[in-house]
Length: 379
Image (cartoon, rainbow, N blue to C red; front, side):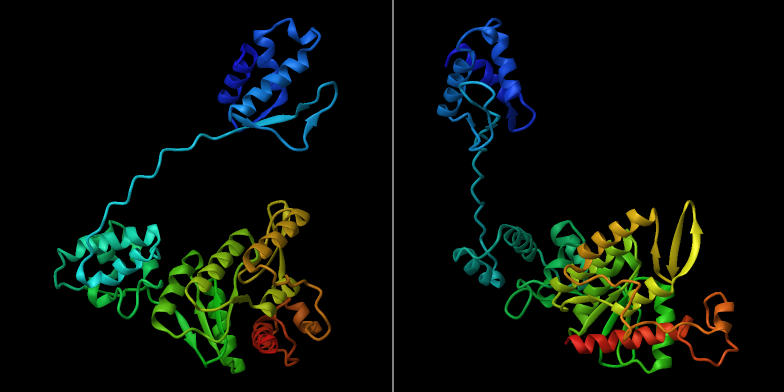
């Protein structure tokens, strides 16, 4: 390899990224041949040096990105070839405990993933010192793996089941946090992010005779609440979610969606009419510079244009292809306007008004009923 190619090879090796642009190569070449840049045949010598790098397996060149400002053409960049890392150390053989004979069969058949093998290896070592004391699940997880939450995820996998791991084998018992819920029937399960909204919907559900189950998701703890339900209840026929209309709210909804699927609880869908109600009948209030629209748990903050854009993106992230509800609903779903008496009550239903218009708590009952009916229509 000539001096020009050696200089470019050093520049490639010292580059912060794998992709090294042509100007970097030209500068490295010019550093060892200061008169070459103005000499005849300079680009040809650079091209020959790049060819040496390619032949030596140090770089690859693009198929289409080339500098054609002069002859001969040169690649617009080169990509450094990564040297293979050290080989993975061989697996330490495990002499499986008799109660984990099924794990030995899975390993022999190549059907045991490395994370599962690592976890079962911890169990295998623990079984040799197992005592008869029964403790809560997380205490046993800490005892076996040094991680109190490791067992939480495993109990919902194929490693747990008849003929495999069990609570009896591990001398522990499930100890999930209590779930605040209101069971009114066998219909839709509605998970609600915030406690205040949960209480409002509970009252509305009783008033309208709603046939379903309301579950308090406890905000960021929705994953543990769903895990507790999955461990103690049969999967619901239908599962919906309602939470804040902001970035944090959609992040929690995304967590709930993925966790419900992983736990076998089924697809989690948005509670359509409750979100429509937030968009359509929210109470305007000022916060800092920009107006904020709130209704119980729903809120939009920030610049109106940027907030709307972020809200749309967050909705897609949380609920996938489910279309985001808009404030302008179809006539069949439109929230009826308030009467003048309720309008004077600042958008809330006047306790002394007998008009029955759908605002305040009445609107919540109406939206709750519509959520169920619309879910029935889609299933």
